[in-house]
Length: 114
View 1 (tube, rainbow, N blue to C red):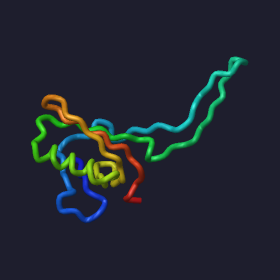
View 2: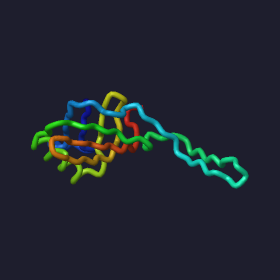
View 3: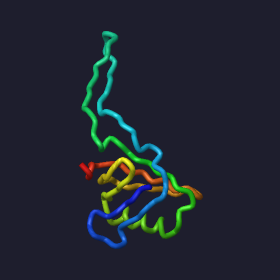
């Protein structure tokens, strides 16, 4: 289950989605690994941040109301508050519909529940 809401009071800015996030516990460190001329490698490690994560959710047969609410949130809010099984976050929402499938992507910005 996933909830989306506006960052300010807005009666039209909330949506509850009954679906399972496909990647709730992912992680990746920032940085790079570069091969050097001597056969070794140069490693740059910039650590981990919540903003390195993007949550994905796919739903079948979205309703017209759901699509309208998602369009509203994307149009009027640069970031939304999202809550799911791993916590509460500020996130940038994108979505796309193809045939009967709705795919949401939430690029996490910051954690709100710590």
